[in-house]
Length: 259
View 1 (cartoon, rainbow, N blue to C red):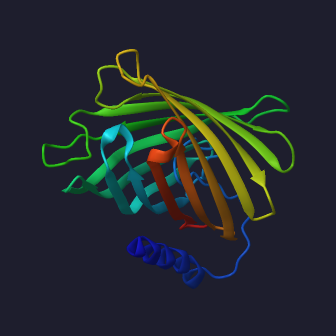
View 2 (cartoon, rainbow, N blue to C red):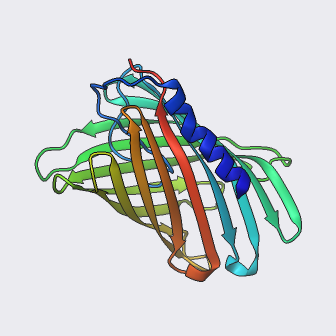
C-alpha cells in the first residue's frame, strides 16, 4: 500500500508542476476508473491520459488473494467531434495462497461515438466498442482468445446538480457465452469542482454458473484541480460478498493537449 500511495502522490503532483494556470473553453470529460462511462467525447485533436493505482483484497469463493497495480491506464484521442479512439492496459501483481503472478491485463483498443446529444427528457446516447487482445501461456491475466465488449450508454441531466447515467453491455471475454451487464449511476455535483458518484452494476454470467448474477456498488469522489486535470478516489463493494472483498483506487485524468 505504501508504494501505491507514493505513486499516487507522484501522479497528483505532476499536473500541478507542469501545467500553467490557463482557461479552458471546452468542457472537461473523464472516464477515470472505468465502470459506466459517460456519453461525452473528447474534442477533435485532444489526447487524454487516465490512469490509476489500486489495491484489492478478496476472500470470495474460499480463496484469499491480494492484488495491486501501480498503473491501469487508458489513452483517449478525439478524431472527430463525435468520435474518439482509445487504448488501454494494466500491470498487475497478485499473491494467491503463496503463489505470485505478475503481468499485463485488459489490453484493448476501442472507440466511443456519440449518437445523440440529448433533448429535454430524452437522454444523450453513445456507443462504445472494445477489442481485447489475447496472450500466451506466460500471460496469467490475458485471455487465450480475442474478446470484445459493446456498450450502449445513456445520460440524463436531472437537475443542475445531479446527473443520471446508465449502460447496457455485452462482454465476450473468452467464455462459452457472453456476459450481460446492466448498471446505473448518479453524479452529485457538490461544488463546481467536487463530484460524488454512486454506482450500481449487475453482471449476469448465465444459467450454468454457480452465481448467475453478481451485483456490485461503488462510490467515487473526483476533484478538478485544473481545467484539464481531475483527481479521484474510488472503491467497489460486492453486494453478494460484502465482508469478503475490499479495494481502493486513486488516480488522475489529465488532458495532455489543449487543441
